[in-house]
Length: 596
Image 1 (spheres, rainbow, N blue to C red):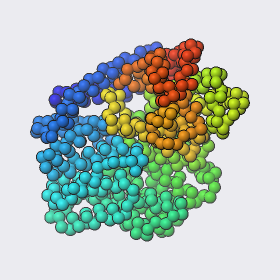
Image 2: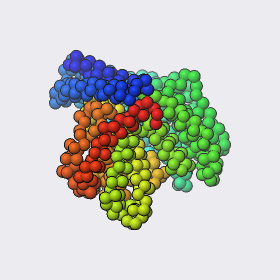
Image 3: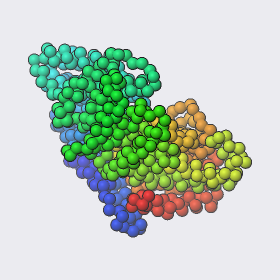
Image 4: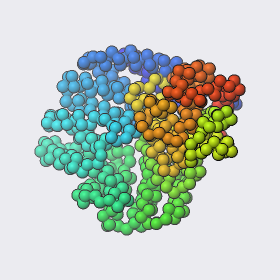
């Protein structure tokens, strides 16, 4: 087993090293694509090996009730060597491994290992569900409550893990100050009675104060909407924020990845309690954007992106008109976007990505669509070359199919956008083609939420990972729904929904007047995904003829019969095939060589 694990880990690192190569600009187009093709063949071979290794190693173990000592040692070795702190690229397998370790610990009734198992299992479960709407999450932090009466039996390390699990229940729940108080009182009680109360400050901070301080988001939102919040909540956040602020030097030296957020909370709650003015708060927030010499990339991102995001948010308390805020923030926004584009893709973490996307949401209130479109593309799809190639290709395929449909059957589009009639459609063909292109260009920006969670092409997707990937339409919609035209918003949300509304995702009964444009986008998306071998080297490439034949089985169910029948025209078929064989390569060459 150990030998197979080593092979998987070696394959894992080989694929990462292939993806990290960035000297593409030194090659001609022909040399580049030969190199990419060679890499794709290697990745596919590694993928076959890794899928087989996982089947041979994990399936037999998952069927057992209890692991032998040697098996547990090997699973633990596998688990430890796949982790990269809490920012692994292999979360799906870590989830399976942590499940194995937890079930084994429960079977053996080893309390310390059970608590450790719940901690890691719940963490990776949470990571894979972190993009789900909060009400759809089903994380397992609550399992720790089954062992609360045995807390005193734990070792010091076991108690640390127990407290982290106990506090982390809040990560997957609505904000509840009652739950915060329960955690706070439990730990204070245990500190008084425990014969060895030497719980490190970072654990104490993480369990109590970090979670209580998350209430600042509730307070901030309520204040913006002129809603009231319980005074007890305000006082609780203030008390915890003061305790953190007074111990900030300790926080800087712990394993906590960022600490600017705690200073932000301290200053923000004082503002909401009317202890400082808006100008004083804004000055404090700007001070937090300063980069210190020893900052990691994640700490730099927290300072430059997250703290500026809060600074922009609180400007609404100073300026009445959005145009005044835009004038104030524009230099900062440009500076932040330059920083984001300077981050190497391999340096990205899930937390950094969350900060960047939250920043985009904040500034979307102040910029017109044309400017925001460039922001979105440069900070999402352009940061991940395979996704950039895919979206540019889907956009062009959508335009080709839309123009064909406009020539052949313009009545197909009746009712789209502002309830266009057939005369308007016939007289505005270029406008509709351009719109179709824009829908293709932005349909997948929600994938950028998923990339730091699932960034693999060295094995097939786990079921848990596919459920995460299925959240990308909702993620894109959430990011840009208030800042893009309705058809583009619909493209983000519905491009994986079936034509007859009976399948696909997201599962919703809502329909859109822009369904004809979505029908075209859906076909274009499926075509490009199926022919992509370079970016999806874990899957075999299909030909256009294969795809058109497959489409026949889904007429007027998954796909629109009218769009499928466009391929009956040999000229269109040849045009699309030519694009897939030549035009797509041209896009890929420009994308890899950073010309776009």
